[in-house]
Image (cartoon, rainbow, N blue to C red; front, side, top):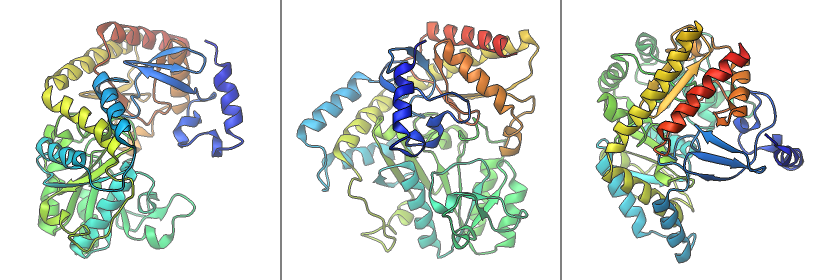
Length: 429
C-alpha cells in the first residue's frame, strides 16, 4: 500500500490548516500514523490519492446509508446545480422535504432546516429555553451534540453540581447551566431534576449513542426519561443526527417506541451534503421566529442543492422500507462473524449492534455508558485500526465512534471484513 501522495498532502496541509485537518478525528491522533486523503468514493469503497481502494465502514459518519455516489442522489444534485447553487429565498424543495420528514417521523409536526447537526442542537436548546422560560438543561456523559459552547462540558464535582468547561473558550457562565448525568442512569437524572426544581428546560440525549462507540439504552431508560419530562414540564430532545432515518424511517424513537418533544436531525437528510434540522411539536416549533419570539436564521438554510440531495435520499428510503431489514441482516452477519472469531481466539471483547450500526470495544466489560466505554484498550484499538487498514478495510479512526453499514455492502464484502478482522486480531495479539 503506497501512500506517498497522502503523506505529502498532509505535510503541506499542516502549513495552512490547524493540525492539517478540518475536523480533529481525521488527524488519526487516536490510532497513530498520518491520515489518508480520499479523492473519490463509489458504492462500498473509498479511493485515496494513491489509488488504494478500501471497503469502508464510516459512510461519511452516517449519511451514506445507500453507499457512495448513489445514482439517484447524484442525478438530483446535478439537476439542482444546473438551476443555481444558492438563492437565499424559499424554494419548493424545502416544503417537499419538510413534508416527507413529518411523514417519516411522527413526533415531528413542523421542522426547520439548518446547515449542520451542531446548529440543530444549539437551536433546539435555545428553543426549549425560550418555550419553558428556564435556563438549565441535562446532557449525558459520552453523548456528543456538536461543538456548541454549552455542550463542551465535563463533569462537575458531583451528581448534582453544575458542569465545568472542558475546552478553552467556553466560559464558566455558559457551563453553569449545563448539568451532566451518566447515560443509562435514571436515578442520577432524577437527582439532578430534584436538585434543580423548576429550573431545567430540557433533557437532550442521543437515544442510541454513537459517539462513545455504539451504546444501547437499557430497558426502561428512555421510557423513564419521557415520564420524568412529562411530570416536570421538561422538553425531551432526541439528538438523532446519527440515528435518524438510519435505524428506521422514524429513527431510534420508532425502534424504541418513545416519543420526544423535539428531534435534531442531520447527515442523511442532506444525502451527503451539509445539512441539519430540528423539529417537533407544533406548539413548541411555533415559538421559532418569524411566528414566535425565539430567533434563529441562516443564509444557507434550505440550500437548494442540499435539499435536492436530501429529497432524493428520503424519497428512496420512504419508498423502500425493506432496506432496514436488509441492513439488520447485513449487520447481523458481520457481528456473528466477528463474535465467532473472538470465541475461537478466546477473546471476550465487547460488541454492540443495532441495525446498520456496530462497535467492537477492546474491553471485557459490557459497555453501557461512558465509564465502561473508557475501559477499552485504546492503544490496542489503534493497532487494530492500522492492521485492518493494511487489509483494505477503513474503520472510523477512533475506538469511540460507531461503525456504519450501507446497502452497498455485499455478502462478499462482509466475508472480506470478517477475514480481515481475524487476520488483524492475530497480528496485533
